[in-house]
Image (cartoon, rainbow, N blue to C red; front, side, top):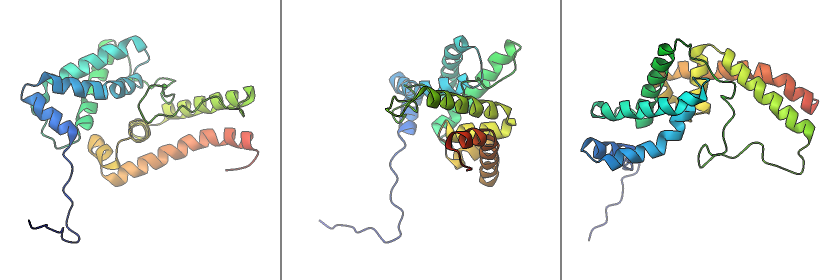
Length: 214
């Protein structure tokens, strides 16, 4: 048997996209495959919708409608983008439709940046009890969180969307550029400006806690 040594510099074969495999199975009529995609992304979709609407009772309904629309449109998915990028668009459009029907304006909730303990497998709670925790430090953390949320809500839509996609949804710059239909350089600029604007709001609180300038 002859062993083939990879040519230096040659591209390494990529692992198959697990989402794409599931999509292809679902497109072929395997309903269980789509159910696995729902299980994988349900909480992310609900968190996304929760940042657009204030009425928490609507989140589950909008998420359910999102997946129904995605299932009906699944034959249109060609794999040109990541599945979640495609699903994200559907979720945003579905939420906006709900809000328009209710004659509400899309808004970012006050708890937009406050993750829940069960967000995902990689989440580490920021407020874990510790021996150094004091009533003062707890209050300071709450004030900082509120300042971040307020700063986020005051950002222009394009900056808020870019920073949310990056910091909350964990999307790559490439995926964000595709979602926002703009060059990667523009995405980087928007995220930088958003971080700077948030920093302006938060820095005085940090300086007050540490007693030094950042």
